[in-house]
Structures are given as C-alpha cells and as structure tokens.
Length: 254
Image 1 (cartoon, rainbow, N blue to C red):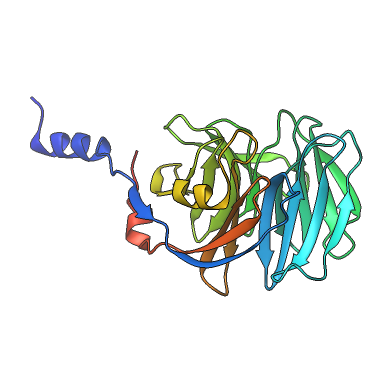
Image 2 (cartoon, helix red, strand yellow):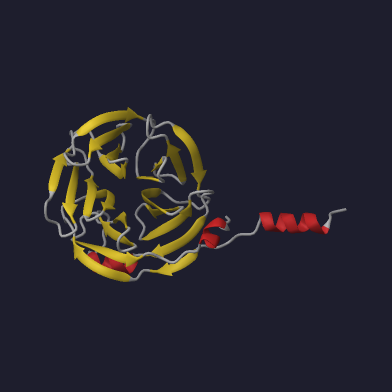
C-alpha cells in the first residue's frame, strides 16, 4: 500500500518549475569594435576586457567604457581565443582546441602561465572560488584555479550548446551557440531559472548572418545590468538585470 506521504514526496521530486521568460529592457547603446570576433567579454569598473577568436587573428583587448585607452595583444597564431574571465587580478583565457588555458597580466596582457586541460574550450567565468567552463555541450565544469582540475560538474537537461558564460549571484548566464537567447542557469543544480530573448537587439545591431551571432555577456555591477554584444557587432547594449528572487533560484527544478 502506498502512503499519502509517499505520493506527495514523489510528486514534489518530479515537479518541474518552468524558467521565467524575460523581455530585454535596453538602458544604453554604445559603440563596439566591429572588427572583433567576440568570444569572451567581461567588465571591471569602467574597463572592458574582450577576447577575439580565429586562428592567426586572435587578440585580447582592454578598453575604457568610452572605447578610449585601448590596449591590444595579439596571440600566437596556433591559439584560437575563446572564453575569458578575470579572477584574482589575473585574466584567464581558454583556447578552442589547443587544450591550453592562458593566464595573463591584466595590465600588460602578457601571458604569464599556461595550464593544460582535455577537450575543447568555449566559455569561462567564475563564482569567486572556482572557474566555470563550458565546452559546447550541456555540461558546465567547475575547476580549481590553481591547476585547472575538475572539482564538480552540472548538466543542463535541455539540449543546449553552452558557450559564453557570466556568473552573477548564483546564476550562470549562458548563450546557446548560434541562437539569440541567453539562459539563466542555477549554479547549484543546472536547472534553467530564466531565459531572455535578444533577437530584436541582434536585428537592430546587424543584418543577421552566420558570422555575426550573439556572443557577449558582461555583467555591469555599477549599473546592475548585462552588456550584450556579438561577433562583428558595431554596437553593444546594456540591458536591465532581471529581477529574480533567491526563492526562485533556490526552488529551481528541472
């Protein structure tokens, strides 16, 4: 005989909470380097750091919010630059197929160290203690910054090619390769918390084609918003950071 309590527990364990569907509210529009094949993108204070990909053309760039005081460092031709994050005053940069994490000086943009890993590198962010990496699958890997060893992994149950990443207060924001939406993912269990459709913004920025896809998410702590851009976009957009309660994050199920 099945007890009523068992039925309640079984129902609760299989309850699905759909993600919030959020409309993007644009707060600012500013110029962006149209020559950048944007891969990773972060903001610290008034400074942006951006990685641009492609073999023989990869570079790292640092610039002020107004695009002044630009510094650029070209990478060796065998590196295809990918995801980028700033951790403990060092830049951490993934490479696509070279299986090498580059650690760079944030002021000079010089490579100071290299760490190996297996597989492809796509997006990179951190939660204050661990680096969080995507590899083009629905898996996210939490890695030790000291040796880049894997400490934990979560899987998004939806079929997504997770790419560019940005961690904000328990949520990992990610784009799905070649799609115009970004997804808020619980860093605890991989459940989707929210989704934001950015197709209208992309159509404002460019005439969409296979080269100019959405590929930039940078959190602005001063404006409490997300800067959005893409490959070869001439503009960048600051959108309102969505209002998501801790209860919604903690109760996310999938």
